[in-house]
View 1 (cartoon, rainbow, N blue to C red):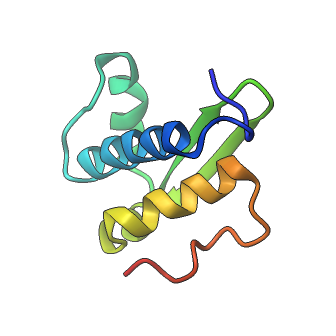
View 2 (view 1 turned 180 degrees about the vertical axis):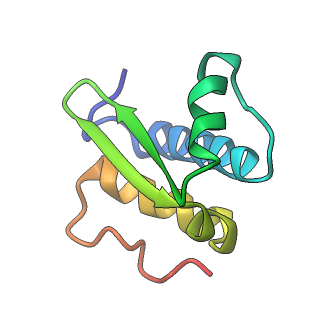
Length: 97
């Protein structure tokens, strides 16, 4: 597990993993059988709710599928990383498109 004080490269790797899973789910792939039922249920909705569990907090993301589809991988990963780091600005310095 990680905290907001974990090395940035480790948190970045986790944010990238989360982004890859979200992008795969948006394209119709199920990245992990453990989450298949929940992802399939979320596909019928406008957004997906994702929990990022860390040692010092749980981050809940409610992301519209449209945002996942239209946001570049790097922009989405930066957004998630900034939430993990508890940065003052959670936008990653731009809209990521």
